[in-house]
Length: 343
Ligand code: SF4
Image 1 (cartoon, rainbow, N blue to C red):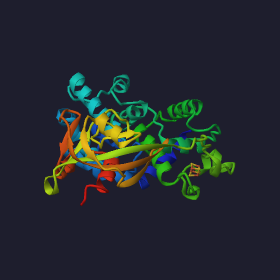
Image 2 (image 1 turned 90 degrees about the horizontal axis):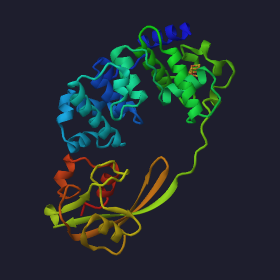
Image 3 (image 1 turned 90 degrees about the vertical axis):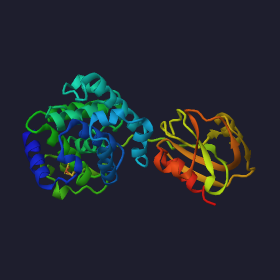
Image 4 (image 1 turned 135 degrees about the horizontal axis):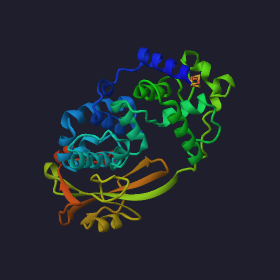
């Protein structure tokens, strides 16, 4: 396997993209970048990463920030659970380890929100440990390089790929080796039309040798997303520039702990009732928004309600248009508000 390592590292040294998190080996910064990069494109992450580290340059700075402030820095990146777990994990590092990310792999994996991928990324990149990582890019590269024919996403394939990655990682520069595998998947060994003619390990690639590049990795059969009908209410108080809108903060996975509009499956009246609000509710929806998640397609009828009354609490508050600029609200909430708050 040595040729794969040498060739990949040589190629990586020459061609790796210049990304802000590649200028640091600070385990905290590596951690932030890896969490942001999960399920989000590199170009999208760059400004978020820079802004986040400017506001929270150290584990102590992040640990001391309140959740709303942290989530407002994440607003637009999606998958807000990641931000809350990162926050919890970093608070643990401050409480348990005085703000120093533990070098010990087991201690790292025990932190909230740190699975084997994030632990391996921090371990190999920041601490030079021979710890494997397998993400979507590595999955595709290894499935092709090693001609893995079982469907990806099944536990058998996942276990096999982690074992293969663990077999490959020992040797010089484990962090760069892991990053080179990911970089190969991101730039040449892409899902469609991989550029095998430029690939540094084409000679070692079993899928290439067997003409199976286009059929690997084998996808897992997917179920069609289920459609869910929801009603959301823009419940306001006051008029014109003084108008305020009620938002609620629930444990709805949809909002990941961010502030969102009262929303329920069923009627707008149910949404208001569940939010603990009374209001003059419009009889017809004022719009419809579609929002597609991995397994669900949401169709949301949007209602307006005026003269809305309720009791403010930690999970129910009135916001002005200015407040909305600074508080953590989800992309879906922004989308819903944009279509109704004007006028
Ligand atoms: Fe991927 Fe093609 Fe390189 Fe094989 S030869 S690793 S399929 S880019």
